[in-house]
Amino acid sequence: MNIKANIGKLRVSVPAGVKIVAVSKFHPNEEILEAYNGGQRSFGESRVQELVGKQPGLPGDIEWHFVGNLQRNKVKFIAPFIHLIHSLDSERLMLEIEKQAVTNRRTIPCLLQLHVADEETKSGFSPDECRRFLARGKWRDCTHVQLAGVMDQMQVRKEFRLIRSLFGEFKSDYFPDDDNFKEISMGMSGDYPIAIEEGATIIRVGTLIFGER
Ligand SMILES: *Cc1c(COP(=O)(O)O)cnc(C)c1O
Image (cartoon, rainbow, N blue to C red; front, side):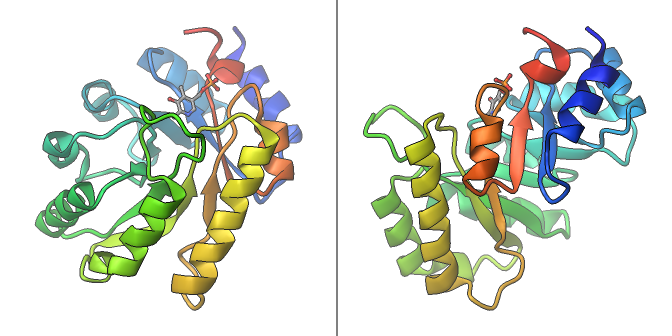
């Protein structure tokens, strides 16, 4: 695997306004450093334990993104340094992030994780759950949690399109004057070109950069 070359190739295929998060789960720090030396600064991990094991041994100017399912009792471990949590999917989780953000004297940006397919097992808010969450308004009291957009893991164009339209709905209903609510995190190695066509502002790419896990 030539990680630097992979990143270079990926970059030329992605418009300048779209952020690439290099998802480094299961890959060791040496490989992350190789990507770093190729200019990559945003990295994503999906397990808290793995992230807190890696983070202290890597450069301090890395922006760490949390992209996996986040348990409340683990928020405290990433709260001191996490750049963006992509997987806010409940009010209880939000309250815990608020508490840990206060403790760390930080504001923590988070994306509303959505699932638009029917499967009950998927994590994330359904569109109606998310509408109710926003309408209830508890998030307005969480002044250290900054809602910064939406995230989704779908792989089908029509679902990307739905996510984009939900983003537009939430933006105009709740965040018309909030410039921070601007991100649509969708698209992975297999589908990022479609996600970009459908409006992604952040793509999360693992395999294309680091090879198979
Ligand atoms: C692993 C992972 C990715 C990256 O997937 P690839 O197919 O390897 O690009 C993106 N998003 C999430 C949430 C992941 O867990």
